[in-house]
Length: 224
Length: 238
View 1 (cartoon, each protein chain N blue to C red):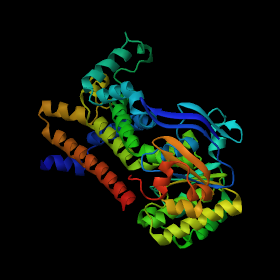
View 2 (spheres, helix red, strand yellow; view 1 turned 120 degrees about the vertical axis):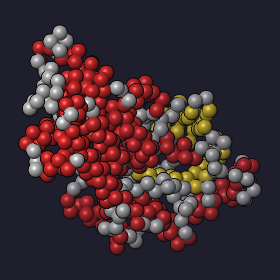
View 3 (cartoon, rainbow over the protein chains, first blue to last red; view 1 turned 135 degrees about the vertical axis):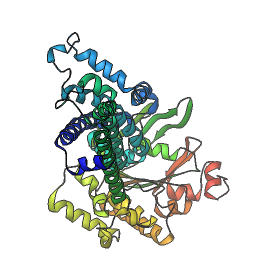
């Protein structure tokens, strides 16, 4: 435990490389998931529930999708025999970004949809009655539901950062190239190198704490 | 003008208006007991809902066929019974409708400041709306509508939760909008006394039907329909 702490404090280069790649991959994945998921969730949330029953059901199902299934799907799509094999993405950080985006997007979209639906009717009526067009109404609803939407993005980021199965399958856990915190923890534990595994676990926990503290502060600022 | 308008939710018809004319520049009091269909009528007029059948004509044009729809919507403004204010300051809320219309710079500041002064809230301009009392919040909602200088001002029981002082101020502002600017005011209320004080014409709605309409003085003096008479005399249980 002490050795793990020393590794973190001394900013062990191998550990830092893994942390940096994790942040890059998950950061890009959540950015893409937010860019797709927030408009999709807003669009669905602003429509009558009975009209979007099927898309909503699909999103809810995908929110609980097993990561290994996403890993398998992405693997099949980008392997040399797959339809996107020509892009040569297998065992690259890009493949990991795709897998994490697929895992995070339904969470962002689903929770955004719920947040917007909770705010929509009165806010939408008021904005429309004041002359807002469709885009302005949507932006107003997003603005009013922003705390919950930020929560959706954070939940998506949590899913991406904590994910191990899919990135292992499509990234390959290659040292210096596609090894991220979760896959490294699995590997180092198997090797019996518990210092590194615990050190990375501590960083992962610290990141989760920081993200939630940020969200908590944001909610406090908005609701005070 | 409404012609053969019906509104149905599922299999339930909540409103049927064979013919109703609302003259421009007047205050029209839409009265009736709770659940009569008054608010549905208002939501049809401000285009938040579309009729299941029939036509709503504004200056001879069918509002639900008119394109761009936004052009007509921007001639109207609505104040709802419960003021829904957007997160932000009083100023931001009153400026909202102007901003979405692309008004910028000194013009927006002048209009917002003038309107806040008119509703007696100029000192609260920078306050966050969540700190306001119910009466102040409703006055912000009214200011947000008045600042747009709408042709048609729709009010859905806007004073039902206000104290007498705020009610008097509200009524004065409504009168002023109508008399000075020629704004057509459609005031939904189940308060007979308020309708007497403000309305030029009265539309009485009961169980989804317009059972009587006409000049307010005439309707209040000698209502033709027994239901209107019972309502005016406070004999209708609702």
